[in-house]
Image (cartoon, rainbow, N blue to C red; front, top):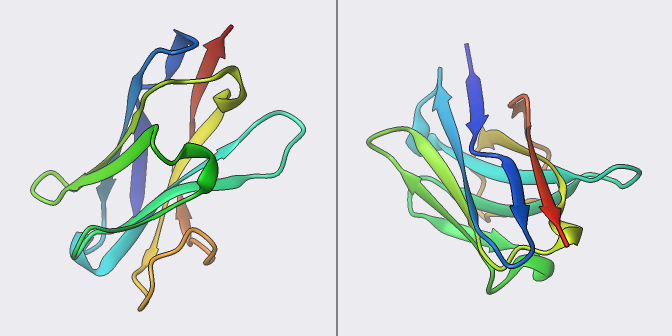
Length: 124
């Protein structure tokens, strides 16, 4: 059974940092890509960063370039989202999701399995 468990969300002031973790189980980690998505109240879900676990190829959305990074620890089957210089507009529920890796890495593909989400709130 595929399981994804997010942790690390919370309340932080603007300009601060948080690191989210996504612990994965139930599949061959290297064969899959994992993405971080977010959904703010009243807005559509947005793909933020995605990583192909086999070679750490990444995909970024423009709004987080230079502030957020994604990394994977294949020994721990865990993907991290390091968020720096947080802004109030980054406030959202953050989800990690996974799919079998494709030729290209993208957050635009359909992801098949999802975690329960973790709340990130950035105060001004």
